[in-house]
Image (cartoon, rainbow, N blue to C red; front, side, top):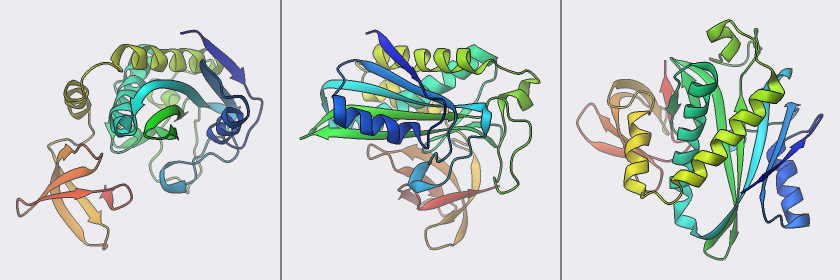
Length: 246
């Protein structure tokens, strides 16, 4: 399926812009909205996402679905995460990891983020708006960001942003097209293999603020992170209910 690319000179949020456009035009094909100057990007649970100006890539892919049930949204997140990881590897030689639920990490630093918003039609998915923020050419980040890293800091190379945005989105679209019919078990196995800190000891804070030790055991069919704690008990956590401590 051919893709339409729409460059936005400046925008508050590519996901918000794409969502408004869908409600007005009901597009039938894949659309990619991208910018290098996003002023109000959001991450998971409404957290602010730093984009910089003319340094990094922010994009949203509008992906239409046919006869796909709502319960496939976890599989879609896993496929998109794997697609972003694979695209970064091909484009830069950097081999990142997927940090649950929606981040791309290089070693212990955040390289990019994913935010998927789904538009429903009854019990089916009508569209996915796949938002990607990638730290590309930033050399110095604001101090309020906890642990960021950019591709240029890793590789000591600058990247042409237009080319990077188009290649990244194209790779994600191709990956989705190829893997969307693959069974969930295979997708999940690949996801877990590439999951940050999988099967290794971690220190974390639970939703009550209690600091614990354990290991990442699984991501279940609801998309919850399953931790085996120091007592051997398996506990599942939803988004925002757990924070890794470095």
